[in-house]
Image (cartoon, rainbow, N blue to C red; front, top):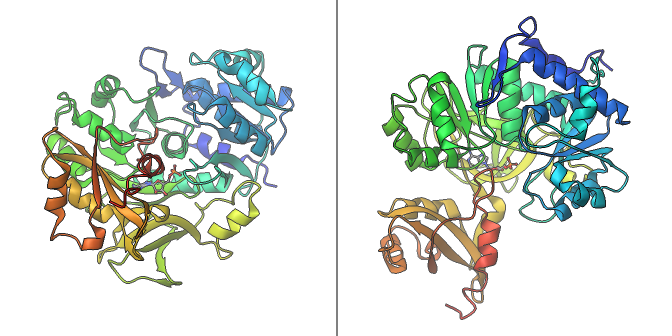
Length: 503
Ligand code: AMP
């Protein structure tokens, strides 16, 4: 085993000798220096060890986004343990599944939910941390001194992140120290993050985007963050003149576009807007450029792979695409065991130091998705254009097969989204007595004048008959999760009976 803790050494290196410099500006709170952050993390690590957490043990954490929660993440890794963050929206029963599956030594939760978590925690010990960073864990940590990080080799596990589990059971993606370090280094360099940067950090920290992309890249670059508990247009707009970069999910961008205070002047200090975790509509990209003069850089990744592709920093950021494979990472688009020609759709596979170590205690699932030669089958459908830009066309499981013919929802959605008065759409397949699946379009409009029939009419002649929605349903909004992803499974469930009358 190496004598150092691979991830912690990397995250600390950029701020070595600059401990007094500010890492996090917390609006309405005190600035947090790099020194304060790492000292807090050491006390957390010492507290975990005092509680009996051993190297390799899982520490499950369902807490509000605070600096102390970041210290807990770093402290867990320092203690040689495995950080297991959980979405704050999960119910007690859901947390019960993760705790049962991962068998953590410690569960950290909000004090308000302590009794509920105690009931499902089994052998794990339960401590608390609240939205002010206070709680029993913090009290224990406050009484601790410094801590020498437990040595961890690049291949050791640093974190397990459960996938959102839109089909079947949620799976724990095991991420090694090297997975996290290599990806953050690549992103820091590709996106040119330096100690001069100030990143607006409004993403949740239970997900790869806010935890690894935003937090790790900022630490690795020795950059500052404006640390916001969540999306808040006022706070983000206030922070913009003092910031140089923002990472967001597409809904950040659409919501900010709704605000008249978003102007060229307000964003003039920013050098980079990054979007990911869900598709950014071409329209949003174009509106953002028209309003601010900035072209959003869209990238693509997933819990299992960290980030795999990105539009270029210099050079054309092509709307509707996720750019090229990042340095050191390979991507291929496959169909029937061979790579597809340019512009054809296939399944996206990626390989590189970013790819996870497999699913926690699911060797069969791992073998299904992670090939022995290192290629990971992402489950995303993609196409590459003649210049090499990759577009994500949707999840494979969202592919519609109607009368034996494939319909890629994105193709239909793009045409619907272009219709006047349409804000966005989701095209799904639901059971159909004749065709197996029937195409249904759920459409969100700007005004209530649009009729379902006018959508159907407008698509005629633009799409082969079998791709045309057999039903158009108007909706006020599309169901989305916290990361801005449209929940197609929820839509399929909601509309599963629309063809019961054979319509
Ligand atoms: P998660 O594991 O929660 O990060 O979800 C990963 C999935 O989000 C990917 O497999 C994609 O389906 C989707 N995704 C992430 N980034 C993008 C993007 N830029 N465009 C389209 N889909 C994306």
